[in-house]
Amino acid sequence: MQKITKIFHWAPRVLCILAILFISLFALDAFTGEQTIWQQIVAFLIHLIPSFILVALLILAWKWEYIGGIIFIVIGLGLTPVIFMSNYNRNHSFWMSLGIIMAITIPFVIVGVLFIVSHFKKKRIFKKPILHE
Image 1: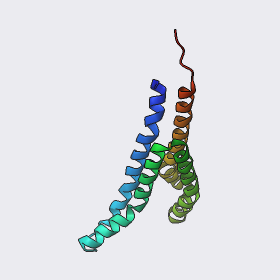
Image 2 (image 1 turned 120 degrees about the horizontal axis):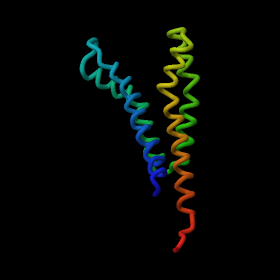
Image 3 (image 1 turned 120 degrees about the vertical axis):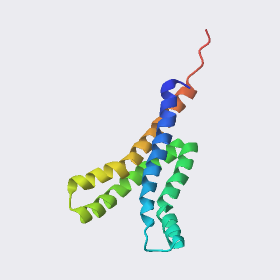
Image 4 (image 1 turned 135 degrees about the vertical axis):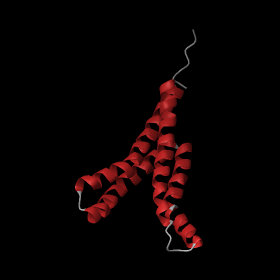
């Protein structure tokens, strides 16, 4: 594999792992002093459900880059208006809500695009005829 292809192979995977870790940080708000430790652990696990789903999709995309790329793009673009409006209704700031979208959903759109690019780069490299000198 060429160096550029290796970059396109690993970039979506690493970026997706980082984005999932970032999303997972929001689950930490389940730990408050108002509930028992078991209630907090259950709430924490419930808050991690989106992260578990994203990990499952990453595993799928790791094997089938094209399909995974499409799924990540659809998820990123599909959740953008929902998350934007939810945050806009809370803070009434267009720019703050846009910043939240840039941090939460757009990385998954980028991951999807990178998975698709990786798929086509590998497909092109493996279809090139081997030249004998």
